[in-house]
Image (cartoon, rainbow, N blue to C red; front, side, top):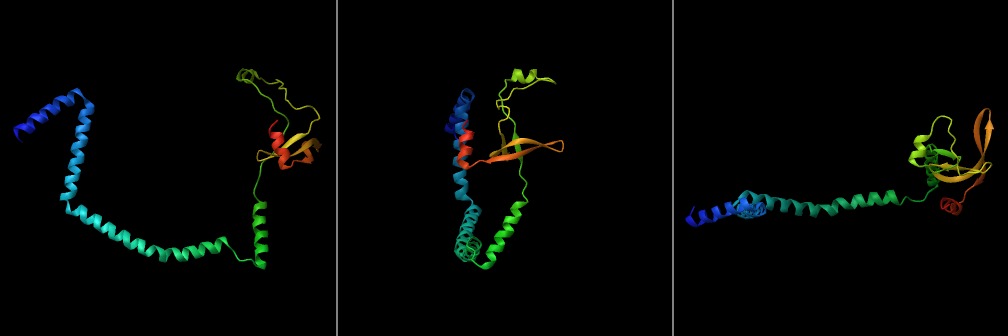
Length: 177
């Protein structure tokens, strides 16, 4: 190393001790300048880059040949021809849907409590609900209001008699209340 380089490196070392950001920036500069020089000198890196470029161009040239059969097969799946069999396949698909379980809930009423009131609840506590006695109960499927009904007792068990099926517009109106 020359005398001038030693002086600059000792000055850099002194400034690094004082300012850690300056040290980090100097280290980053050295690393980036070293990378550029090593790329120019490394014949293996340039050979590997050239090989990757050749493989990429070959792959792009063969892609249209592969995509054509796949596109044709995909369009056949999406656009099925209309035939007498399509009705029976729809019936089979509908049959499969019929076995999907859903959660039916009958809502007796609602109320709001504070955390303090909730913690004060004990066995025998009575919670006042917003619903009125004799008012129809909400019937929910997977959390969505679909009907209303009245409570009935069937062989010592509760049941619900549907009194009204809710239309989509009524559902929105009742959700806003």
